[in-house]
Length: 91
Image (tube, rainbow, N blue to C red; front, side, top):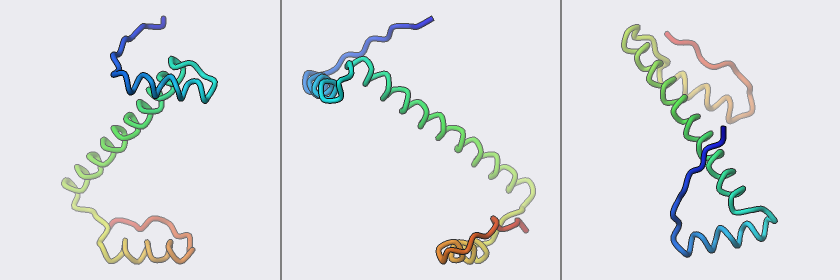
């Protein structure tokens, strides 16, 4: 069931929102919903990636397996030169 949320906007922000809604032929409500959905998707992606990074770091701490800087730099140079290569293996 849809829920209603209220936000207070200063006059300048509210005027900008109304102007953009008019330019886009959309309602201010539509713009706010769209912006909020995009923001939430981005923040949720950030949190997933942060959890993955933490899990990888924990794995490194427990196993000691890592990819040395020289190997990663070489791999990045190959990518920069247009050569598609697989991600380097841990040692």
